[in-house]
Image (cartoon, rainbow, N blue to C red; front, side, top):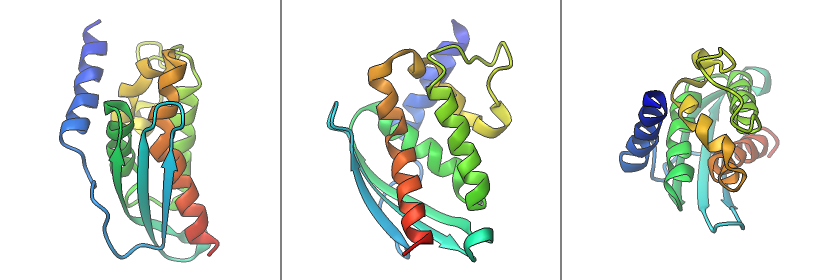
Length: 154
């Protein structure tokens, strides 16, 4: 129970003090995604450096409206992927998607979470128990994948 409380604090901290919030330039692609279930919205910009195979995430900026989960997830995601190659960032995204699809079965106590890859994103483990909230947590991640695909294939 103490771990769950710590995870809630991580989410609330990223919600109250979001990282990389505010749309910045330069950017290679911008997307706007909406969660029709609850009305959460995110406008996200991505700036890449380098060629396709070696492209690196130079910056991610966003503006978001919605619940604490969707906004905190955008903050955590941007922290995790800025500076990584697109390939490595996609791996992080895949790990986060697997966490969200675990339906609460993934846990750090059992070693079923890759904490080295997910870092603060492990705080969303409890969210995976609530199907209605999974889309909230994935909103920014799906927007980032969309923006990155557009930046790589203009």
